[in-house]
Length: 362
Image (cartoon, rainbow, N blue to C red; front, top):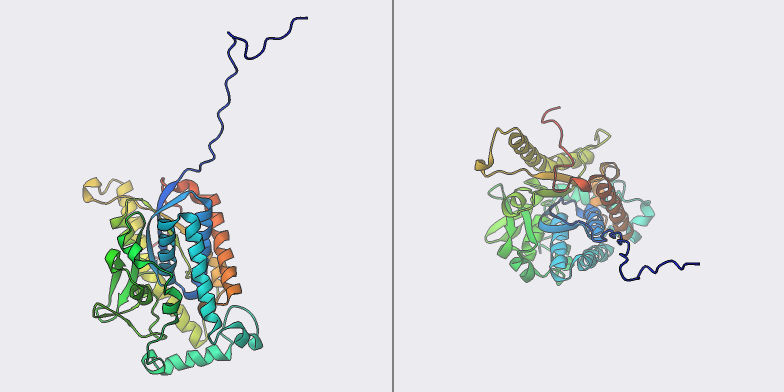
């Protein structure tokens, strides 16, 4: 019986080896626009945690307001010093510090438990007392020393000398100039703990933050967040927005506090959505050939990670709830939202927008 030839017999060509699929994911360079929202910023923490875990996105620029600016600062620092895993660890440290600070305050779980559970504080007498106090007294009266717990949260955690010099990942922080009524975007050598505190300065709770002789309030009044620096100073055409503040509310606010809260939500989203609609208008004009490259304008691809239904269930009062369990729930909601976005829309990166704001008038 003739023995079959060995595959290694001289003169016989071996069968070609099938190419193995690459395990390295395609990476996309993006810019991030991170909204503020107090404790609700833990939702953004979850979104960023999932995106960093996924590994397909390379961050070029970050524009943040309030809690979004704090998330952005730790994200940038982590990426610059140790990559995605270091960024994930720093973000968790930030929110653990927030929870630790909250545990020492009047809204900690031992104080709240006698009045029922749940993230919203609307029916809590301690919250009702604070709400009444801030309508009768300013922080210059009930907090004459200008104490701000966020200063302790950030102290020793953020390396501003690193962020000031960084060019690989650029951070932009928005605040509102009180006297001028104008937006200011801090970047580069201007970055400091004061600009983060200014970006998160709610005027009914904290004294205005003074920087270079000017006073600043929360950046959300002028842009929550601001897209313009990402367009002007970054090369990537993809801007991914992490939205925290709901656009829609299912019920009409009727109580005085609910009306005021809804006014604040609308005002914090209004300038942001006007900027998005301006970008969409330019995109349409470029696509139609009505303006050309000589204008210096370019298409910007807009993407949004959000959980409108989940966030709309939370009252504005829950933005002051820093309980660790609640923060982890928000983190998990953010991770789930990011996971859904990656599954449904990641193929649009580099090709076009994955969402539209809708008509200008309805």
